[in-house]
Amino acid sequence: MYTDADRSREVVPEKDGHDKKWRDEFGRDYGRIIHSASFRRQQGKTQVFPSRESDFFRNRLTHSLEVAQIAQGIAERINYDYDKDLGGKIDPRLCATAGLVHDIGHPPFGHNGESALDKAMQRYGGFEGNAQTLRILTRLEKKLRYAEPLAGDDRAGLNLCHRTIAATLKYDNEIPAIRKAADGFVKGYYGSEKIIVDRVKASALNGYVLGPEEKFCTIECSIMDLADDIAYSVYDLEDCFKVGFLSPAEMLASDDALLSAVAKRASKPMKRTVTINEIQAVFMEIFSEIIEQPAEDADSPLDGIVIEDDIAQQAKRDESLLTFAEAYRTSKVMSEDGYKRTEFSSELVHQFISGVELKAHKECPSLSQVYLPEKLMLRKEVLKQYTFVAAIYAPRVKLGEYRGYDLVTDIFKALMGDRGDLLMPADVRGRIRKAPNVSVKAREVCDFVAGMTDRYAMEFWARLNSDAAESMFKPI
Image (tube, rainbow, N blue to C red; front, top):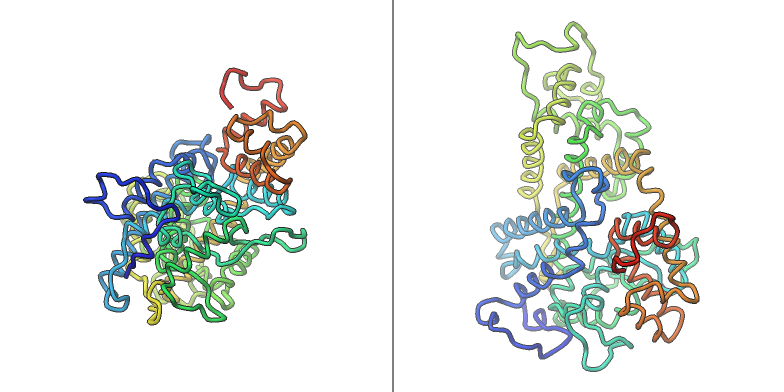
């Protein structure tokens, strides 16, 4: 399944460690990620709800740990059922490594920060989270340097194995150096890392030539991407239940405008038109599985109320009707009972992992892909898109994020100013002053801003603008 080329690194030879006697190359990569500064910084970056709101909520770090565990689980499941189709076993640790790093390129304030940096960088190669992840791994992390500069840069990042880097390459596309606003957001990798991407692809393809309609995406990357979707669709919803931001009752009673928005977003990944009735049917299936029938003598705040359940009729279900009182009780339990929330999340994740199927690539096994069958994929997309529309785009969440765009924009402008280098740490300042042109300078500034946590960005902005800024004795 893996060749010597997969285990090759950009900088060779490395200093041999005693652990090479008992630890393989992919295991070494896993360790480098865990101990990297960029990995730690994810604890200070928002997932859905700002970390300052509660210690319970997931942040980018805990989300990445969950993605890594799910990715490892999928790999183990594929190895159990499909190892003959691949000609060998997938390395579960390699898939977990991809899960750990898949979000390290995210800037402060999530998608708002990403949008602000991309707009600021339109004339200098743009900004995109996945491209920044690759840049962190192959350039910015302070592990090794090239003996001679590669594409004008001697930094080699963590010097990971080519197959490890390949597991993070979700988009086989070079982002244009200059874009117009009308061109929109572009996902891919920066031109500054193209030479590394080409080498990584050559190692993973092992002589295979991509067809005109084929995109480069390894089996490990496919597993990581699916694991990310599963974690997003299940655990972000669990956070919403915990805080009372959403509830099963609210989801079942969603108005047509919200359901239409969810259906529209779900239709693209499903590659067909998703209807409102299908979304309602998914909710009925999910929540009917976790509802316990109340005891005959149990009191309900809605006793005596009889409501005809149009949802069940529209979904053409033959099972017993879900009464409004039961939905109310379930909603309350999901918010207050940690056992029920855990049971709900665990069962959904188990269903997804157990249902994963493999599309083997006979000519180049490394390009094999994993996927969910139609029913499970619809379930995943409905939960994912509903959480996105109903929670992430909710006014209460957006109000908290709104200033993030302006903060990132203000910081970038200040650092790009004539004396902006004086506002940065010594090592960054040195690179800014040596920049041969404005494009390189902008990328260095962008790297610095993108690496900030939410809190650090707010503190930095306060030093520039607030009367109550941090002490001058606190390091930058």
